[in-house]
Image (cartoon, rainbow, N blue to C red):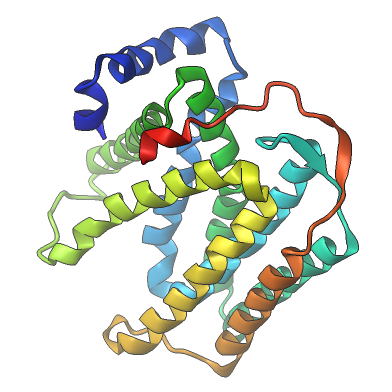
Length: 275
C-alpha cells in the first residue's frame, strides 16, 4: 500500500497531511485510529484461535460485530441515514448471540477457554465501527487508498509497539514462518477492509457485519474440519451454531425503516479509486 500511495503525488500529499489534520481536529479524532480495531482482532487471533478453534473464534466475533452494528446503524455512524431497530433485526442479532453460546458450550467446563472467547467478542465490538472510521478518513483524504494505508499504519504501529515491549521483557522473539501461505494474511486483510469500507454505506454496518461473517463462518468450519493437524475439534453444536449464525444473517437482511433526517458529515466514498 505504501508503494501504491507514495508513488502518486495526490495520494502521497493526502497521506502526509493526515497527522496535521489529526492535530487540528478536522474530524473527530477517534476516526484516525480505526486501525486499532484491526490490531485488536489480529492480537486476539494470535492469542485465542489455538485454544478456541477458528469456528468458535469467528462466532464469538459475530456477537460483538452484531451489537456494534446495531448501535452504529441506529446512531447513524458511517451511514447516510439512521436505521430503526426493527423486530427482525433484533431477532437476527439475538440469534447471532445464541450461535456464540452454542459453539462455546463445549468449553463451559474450562473457564480459561471461555475467558479467551471474550477477546474476539471485544474485537467484534470495535470492528463493527472500523468501516465507519475508515470511511470518514477516506472522505477527508478524498481517497480510500489513503484511508486503507493509514489504517494499516496505525494497526502495525500498535502491534509493533506491543511486540517490542514483550521482546524487552524477554517474553517474545522474532522469527519468520516457513510456510508461504502464512504471508497471505496481510493482502487478504487489505482486501477485506477495502470491501467493507466501500459497502458500508450501501448495506449499513449491521447487515455488512452479518453478511461478511456468514462467509467467515463457512470458511472457519471448513478449516477446522479439513485441517485436523490444527487440533481443533468440530462438535455438533459447532455446526448448529454456524447454521444459526447464517440464519441470523438472512433474517437481518430484511430492510428496516430509516429514521428521518440525513446524518450530517456522512462521508462519500471514492469508489472509482479501487477499480
